[in-house]
Image (cartoon, rainbow, N blue to C red; front, top):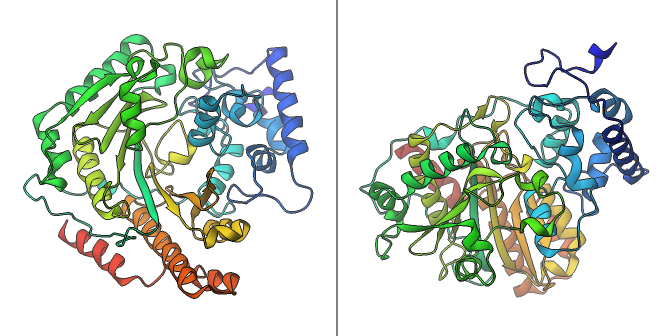
Length: 461
């Protein structure tokens, strides 16, 4: 009978069941919490205005599925609680911790190791499709080959490969970043690595980043800048208070959510046993690139849009393309034929890319429920800030889609959004809902300049 609870064609579990009474009771309490959070009538998807992690997880962790997977343990001894803790754990009222969980695990689930995607597949795969705005009833297709592995690196041209500025008059976009996440093949996630392996990852990546040819690659788009390379800082230098390095990163929009070990009682579950040792960040001389090492994933590349032209996402994506193509040439990254590049953060599966813009849209922000709903229809996540007129716009999907298509969809959708805000400010229209419906009705728009720019790049590479 116990075979019923094991993983089909098992190569990823510990081949034993969870039989610790305290752990099973904790899981039962978690299930009751999630079950009580399930909406009575209309199920909430991850992109719903009213969705919270417990609501979303409650939709997918049905009793039959829960009873099937609650006894399973991965080959690295992680159980179901290690996956769902961001949604069910009562966190300390600490800004750093809350921000870390909300931004890195917005779906309410984490992946403490790669094996959870198979061990708990009955629960995770439908949820992952929902998080990425993919039809949860359909099977996942093969994830397309990375665009960062298809082309030859050139260090000769300083011309931007894609020229797309979604806010050429600097009216709406205040700042922006692109993040790309990768993990090195044949190594476990940083959470599980011992000191020697953590040091090895840090040493290998920093050696690559300090090379002269990397400086040429990362700086070639901005030939007029005085970009000469960069500096590596340990995480201890970032976490110390006050930290000049942390202030620099924050002002450039490149600081990721971080918390000290003493800020959370089970930091091991969040960051691993040796946090913050053998972790850090490489910062380019021009303060537009931050490459984080061993923070959730082995490699997290963040690039900010130009300070004097924050809507120029084309030049920013071009810089990311150069950097990631170079890194793909130097390192082998873990890959799954369905889930693409694997990550500790399920929102970063697939292409592993997140675009994020801070936009000032007072017209659209007057009807937050409507704009949140219509952004979700178009594949955009709308998050409010302390200023009611200002929002953070990012992409939901990076799974089952290539990097260039992910960029194309985001550029098209955000361009539509800003065009609509401009129309509202000019016309003072009383028919906001109608205009929103018209602009967001189709999955793709006919913005010829965006399509032509991307097509031209792909033809030349």
